Amino acid sequence: MIFDVDVWARLGDSDIGATFTSASPATMLFGPSGVGKSTVLDMVAGLRRPERGHVRIRGSTLFDSSSGVNVPAERRRAGYVFQEPRLFPHRRVRANLLYGAADDHALAPTAAMLDIAHLLDRWPRTLSGGEARRVAIGRALLADPAFLLLDEPLSSLDRGRREEVMRAIERVRDEAGVPILMVTHDPEEAERLGSAIVRL
Image (cartoon, rainbow, N blue to C red; front, side, top):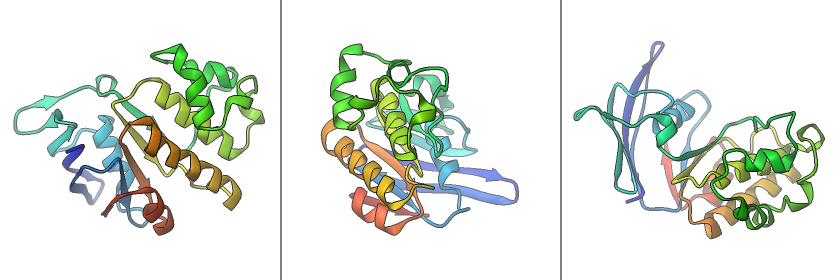
């Protein structure tokens, strides 16, 4: 089993949570805006502590309320790509990609896989939305994550840019060997990118 998640938390007046297991290389958290998909992702990443439940990934327990296990976010080896790319504006694309990289030698194959090799000397402000998202995914991959968390990586993109990023995620799913847990409210994205869909 890759993902074994059972988490619950109180957010304002709402109960937020999810229970699912998946052995899929790409698992989609699917549902309308406001149901707590991003909050569930934050609990898996360790950015928000669940009030009860557990998070187990590839057999490792990252959180378990019954035993008191709570691995800090920085030790969970989660590659987190937020809704906004959050690139460092004062660093060129190459430096953004290598920030926190586990192995500089992985830069060339990762850039090729994501079709961003021609962008390495560019500044983030010169990138399109789709290019910036692909760079953000590359930066997460180069940190050698145990798993990849994608929070609405296609939001606010026009159809052409969206297709660019979808193809990049497909290549990551098929070639990188890193399991993906992705949030989306779009049924087309969920069906195309995920071999397992969790409806919230």
